[in-house]
Image 1 (cartoon, one colour):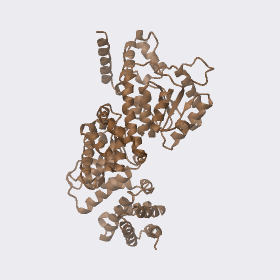
Image 2: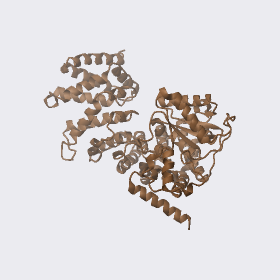
Image 3: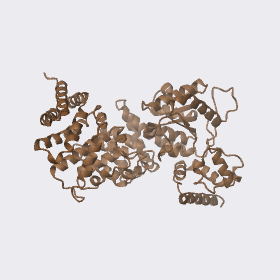
Length: 575
């Protein structure tokens, strides 16, 4: 019996040799042979497809095919009929193979194919004046290019190979009449969506269209729409709602109840995807109100017999988010937080950030601090253990990384800790706080942090961190190394003295300089002690509004509006 993997390797080696000599007459035959081998395994033979792609990839097949595409694209107007067929078949191979599990798509990302596909799309959109009636060859190439970019966009590192500030090449297709091209364009935008990218993928119509596709797919026998499965569409919506503005859009178009229908269904893949999407949505206050009507149903699904572990975890995440929001409302106004340990919160992404977080925890333990980190302390239910760890902490260290800001678990931990009025202390382990305007930046916007991104400064930064902890805890009993019970001030940089209400604008300016907050001087121009007191009250009673308002005061007009709002609030308090 012929070993299909060896056959593919042999064909790829021969293709590599002939391509190196620019012998495209023979190369096109080998390209067709590879395409036919894959096609023969398309019907319910995923293992065979994976084996073919793995063998192809082991011989640097991505580089070989992309080289052929690059050379032939420069001669496209001069190509013979057989050369054109080879050109199209190369794109088909890249489209099919990039949709197969494995490392092929990662290797493909290191070639020039993304740039080549984008150029195809830019050229295609100019073929006619904003109408999509292409010649069949042009339409095929556009579909192939969008298909390849879609498969690449699903990789976790895809944003690294796209120009996130210029995704305009997708707009003619997203706004066009071809439903298939619209669907692929919307999915690419969804998977490249991130809080740091504003504009195109934050638009309301993209989110609405994705929910519309999902609703249509649900009512087909195959649970597919425009070639996209319900699971794929839900995953795309999940990426879109990382942007908080899109959460509200999903709620407005009845997307929450639609996702609940999938959670209550019997397709496990769709159930897990929908539950993950609802968990991400559950951080929106307006979505929380709608989800609370489903709590009983969610609770019954989460009490599974253990055969649906991932689904149960997602649902418990939703329930804990909803319950923690209720608890946070109940404890508003609490001024103190007690606990027995420091909690180190980080993302399990396997990168440098995770390693640094664990090293930080070890160093703190060596200094006599009692530290909770899941590597040592996790028992029983993940989410139950997290809630208990937060409740028993007196200081919550956030290890800021890109993985942290994208993780529902981490977001739940941080917001739960904030709601429980724990003292938060950010440390940078592989990302920044200042380059983004997202939930994590809002949460930490007024806080001092320790930067651990340079490994050669690790020990000095640990010393700095220990000093910060002592400052925040206000430790007076140096013999109490067990850190058994502390009463902490809620704020780290907004430490308020008893006579702060008498401060004038000059006192506020001095206070900002002393706390290294000169960047807020423009936003708080003219603010006095009463203004700072009002801001402090706002932070306690409406933290998300506080952070968003302060962050968006990036010009004088917005700052003046905030100052006027605070004066109005004080005036009402005096009635």
